[in-house]
Length: 305
Image (tube, rainbow, N blue to C red; front, top):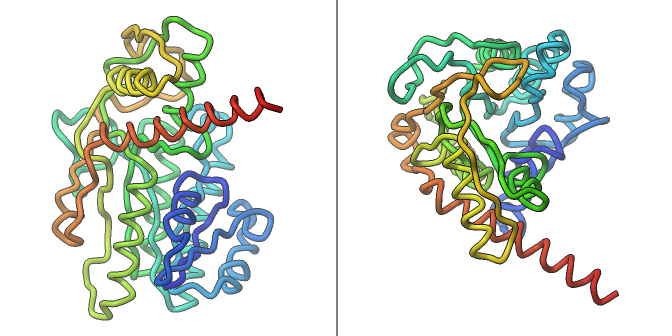
């Protein structure tokens, strides 16, 4: 099975490449700029055609939530038009597309976890551009899986786990929002689910479950609870630690409004593919240990040079 994943620097793309390393049954080809640039639609088909995929994973996106408020045209060019072009290219190549979307398509007013059929109502440009991308993907390729995920973290790129560890290096206390809830999700777990779903699509020619699914870590948290677990885990491995002070979203200056509740139900994905993500606390410990021990090794190397 050969997967072409859009983006080289993204968390999911990097996690997919690592997950496929050493396996004989799957190959992952990361396709990114300049060969494939979602802001330049003319680059998409040729780059994916050259990758010769059995499945296309549409993971690249514009993810600067606050900056999107000032760069609406670019956000929609990448997340809507670009995503549609990726799905269209997959259709022209005769293969399915697995597209990653976001919890930000919801407004956060529901009491419980959102299911796939709940009404969407994004609060900002980023969520609106991703929702438009879902529509573009579905229109361009009937053989699509749209996987809404949330609060992704990994050893790669920029994410909340790495930010907390960096801040704890030079602060005794960090203020973190306590009234926004969601599902912390390891990009490694996303990659595992994507590979599982891709294998199903390749092996089952009669698969009829195309559509939208939610894919997040098991269990929920608020940001401050997530931060405490990150830094408690870091301290256990000898890494940086700081106290967490709860604040409200209203006290945190941000240009884009966030959903107060973006918890997602994964019952549909579990039913269709027989897989549920690990509990987020366990996956977080694995990522934190890797990051802390990597920093320790690098510091030791520098000390001995």
